[in-house]
Image (cartoon, rainbow, N blue to C red):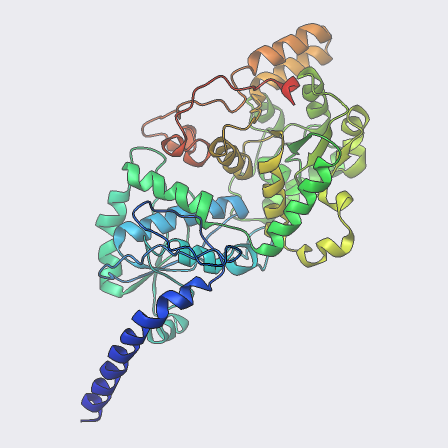
Amino acid sequence: MIRATTSVLLWTCIVQLTALGDTWGPHLLKGWPSCFSYQDSSVSVVEDKVPSVPARVLPPKRVYKNNGYLMVSCNGGLNQMRAAICDMVTIARYLNVTLIVPELDKTSFWSDPSEFQDIFDVDHFIMSLRDEVRILKELPPRLKRRVEIGMVYSMPPISWSDISYYHNQILPLIKKYKVVHLNKTDTRLANNGQPLEIQKLRCRVNFSALRFTSQIEELGKRVVKLLRQNGPFIVLHLRYEMDMLAFSGCTQGCNSEEVEELTRMRYAYPWWKEKIINSDLKRKDGFCPLTPEETALILRALDIDNSYQIYIAAGEIYGGQRRMATLAAAYPKLVRKETLLEPSDLGFFQNHSSQMAALDYLVSLESDIFIPTYDGNMAKVVEGHRRFLGFKQTILLERRLLVDLIDQYNSGTLSWYEFSDAVNESHESRKGQPTQRLVIPDRPKEEDYFYANPEECLQPSYSRLDLSVGGL
């Protein structure tokens, strides 16, 4: 009887609130702060009489039968997690489940304690995608208690899987257990062979829904403004940091003590599975980041004017000033966020590597030229985002060819002019022009990454672009 009485009272309240919502809802929504740029030509907006307060239109909620709840724990650095979040939103949408705001990696090399809402605008993320998928900040209380006591089905999905894998293998588990936790998210959705709507939703999440917090956005704008005051600038993603060198086993230019230190670190992290590495062979195969000294040679060969500002988008360079000396001598206008901003500006970001990376990401998007020295996750995701912004110039260095040319030049086999001509000629078609992704069936790790070239989402504009370095 108590249950029946409570149910009647609840339904009465719901009916009353619905009636009130029809009356007050539109007025309340007008006062919400802007959080999404989505526009639908089928929705007409009645402009407010006060032009300084534009009307607020949210995408309508998508109504669907909820098949259960999907929890995800992202792994890796910021941009690996960014791509993974796009995939997980897309998977949740096409399984008709409710996604819980993703958990970020706090146990990797960087030990960044940041939560999702510390880096991304979580309210914008949820509201901007409400016409596609339901996203909650946390599980409903009853299910949350089950998870807290360990009653949750947890598993890593298979890498590079089609959406059909999630329909056939993951959805039945969600229906059975109500909640499924995916504890690995990197590259778990195939690059190619997916329906067009899948690819377009991945892009929508990446380019519209994943907006950084206002604090990160504002600081990024300040850095760009400071750079623009002094003319054009290039962002150099100089991935010559301790973790990368230890992981890759690349020790070109390091002394014996540094080689030993990097080797100890590689053995200390069990998830870095490759332990015995031939650094020279790996470098010749193009699998090592360029050193600062090699980078200086390549920038000069590409005729990059030494009067341009070069913003270093990276953490602490391994070897410090000793390794940066050659690059600094060739390009005296080297800057970093730490040199452009006051220590107090970056105080909040200290020991939060993902938030620092978010700042570098924003500056990289706005640069006149973006040059990564290694094709890691940041290099790839920024490359794809710059393509989306109008095929902004990104010089993709062919490291295997370049290290061979560098060795020939250093040995005296090539003159400077021969070396420079060879570098320029080999990179004419590697400046971020429109192109199709390379597809290699059964070898997805070797094919082009979807987020580096999301061609399904790019404007089909193949007009002549000013991609010359001198066009700054």
